[in-house]
Image (cartoon, rainbow, N blue to C red):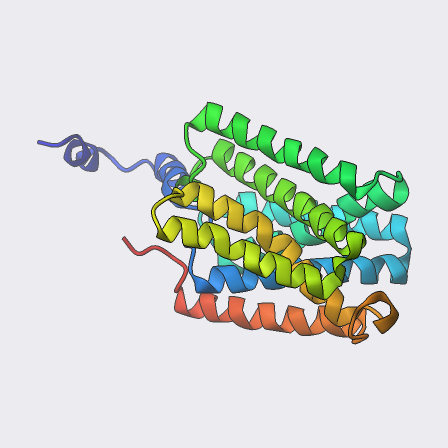
Length: 266
């Protein structure tokens, strides 16, 4: 008789059952085309929303409000027992907004150049990955089932957003502009995909490489759409771009909530 069969014969313990559910249910979505589309949308929306709030409220109140919303969204994400689309993507949006603010504080508030902040955030991300791997022996997102793994996951996500913001601003500031940066990162994101398809790059490495690049890709596109023509943009405005990208995110997340296309069924 198998161990699982023996356990099934034991008296039900509601507290143990709840704990097992919390430990066994993956807390992140499956990686589908919807995942990448929403990811790019959240990065762009976070970029323009951060700038819009800073102009509307002032930098300090905006950072304070963004920090509170960021913490609240993560508390909710950690509280649910399994992946819930709107909870997860709300947390991603707030990481995007606050990650942008963190990178901007270093550059605008403290005067740290992008040539320095970009490698600093790269080191921070490498440190998160090193600690995660040393603790769990994997960086796969398919096993985010414990508090510790979830903590490492969100630390890595925050670091990727800060790194991507700094990298995107760096390329825009050295002459490429926002549209040129978007084209650059659109090409760059194909590299890990092609390398993985060719069998020369493992799935975990390919995923995190693409994940980092989505941030400057989405941010560069959103900035190009929102900012004034004299700054290399289309001049559509921070508010309208933030609103339109938010509507697109809500529509896709609503679809995933109903269809559960990003939930593993086996």
